Length: 426
Ligand SMILES: [Zn+2]
Ligand SMILES: [Zn+2]
Picture 1: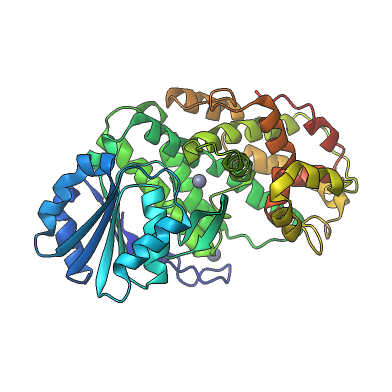
Picture 2: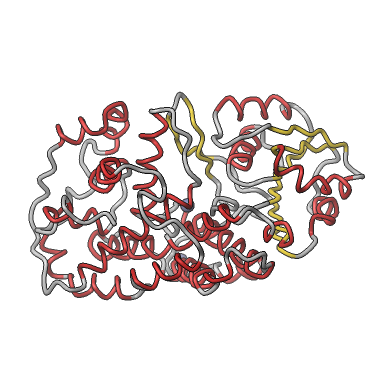
């Protein structure tokens, strides 16, 4: 991956937005675990280094310390870290505060998120050594952290350096690779939602950033049948795809290019389950299932001749009830107005052919389902252990927990809204 060239290509974009990214160096290749020390030196990391990992990952990547002989390494190894909490972040901060030290996160997901926020708050250089191609947060500058049972996305920092050793990525557990596939396939819904919002509300959209997401998603999509194989090339491709979409997100300063209504559905489920003390599934598993559901919904619009716009008749009392303990946060996101208030429902009616074109511009539900089957992904809410009730609730109400317009939310301003209540969930 030639990061330097990529960043150059996005200078002076005609959309007018400055597309910047704090990642300075990305290396993806076979056997890079032996090169970590050299890569850190080339990137002027301080001599003192805090290595953070968890037991399972570190058992598979212990070799990494051989390459760090010229560094004074302190290691902190978690037993297990599925959910990153603010306590974890503060603890890592206490290990680096006031020192001239760099942070090396060895792992994926929560290990990265914890280090991303701790290093940002203490202003320390950060390197992520990714060990599984399982989600697209590597290059991101935000970190989802749980505080008092609520998961919030905090402004953190993008790592200066990202390293992926394809040998290790290919040997990652199959569930993690499938989850990465699910997170990448979601980009097709994200692209529909972004363009539909741009069409109807005029939200800023950059064709070139969208094409970066598209390129990354297509690359992974084509590799569906190899996802579960211990194939270095595929694992490297998926990892790079996940990096590209992360970079696309930092280019726009939002998650818009890589996350659509399917991510909000999955976030809703996760928040509700956290309240019940349930450990969430792998992010990409839930996201993949939500993607299929939303694509099936969007594809079903293609057979409609027309759609009729109507005023949004959201019953806010009902929404508040459904949100329960999450009510306060939801209300804040919908006050003083909700995202659809400025939209004339007739615009959806008049642009319906264009909306259908947007839907047709990405692979169809059948194609995506077939690819997910090949990749061994979970496909239904039952596969990911959710009840029909929770899935219906997430499907119908998730949209109020983010101030972001999706095509699904636009359907609330049409005569199709009623049909959502009975739309088959599988
Ligand atoms: Zn642009
Ligand atoms: Zn994601």
